[in-house]
Image 1 (tube, one colour):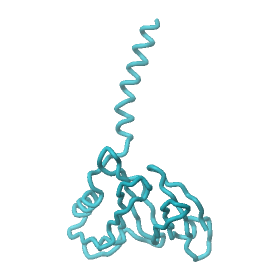
Image 2 (cartoon, one colour):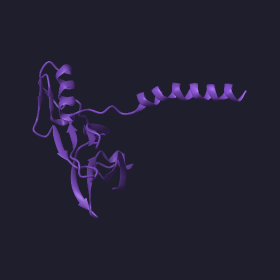
Image 3 (cartoon, rainbow, N blue to C red):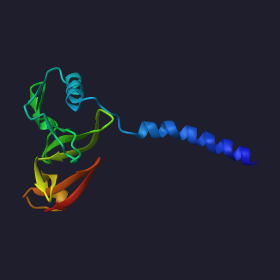
Image 4 (cartoon, one colour):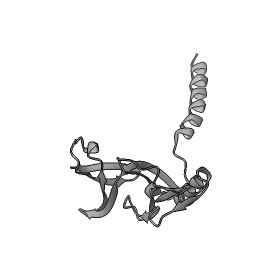
Length: 157
């Protein structure tokens, strides 16, 4: 009985391992190349503005990370076609020690500043007011720190 239970548990573990591996985020060698290649396939003519990729250390680990901004993409003559009243999609990538980059978040924002607060670099996102549970027209300002591969909201107003 014990050996049958052990074999059954062992089989379940081996079946679960491939499922867990598929659930993990895919590493990309360079976010700029990865995203530009994607949009070159999606668009007949893809043009990228100067601010399409920004490289900076977003999680304070000493490795240079990357942020891509679709507001800086012109696809088939249409600039910023992914943008709407909520802002433009931005993808956030962190570089990992093992090599490559992991996309950790996508946020639709108007803009951001990357500033130092209490010794750490943090984002100040300007976003649609509904993201701060408001109905007025003033942009929401959300202060966010990246810890490892997670966004941690410090404040929103």
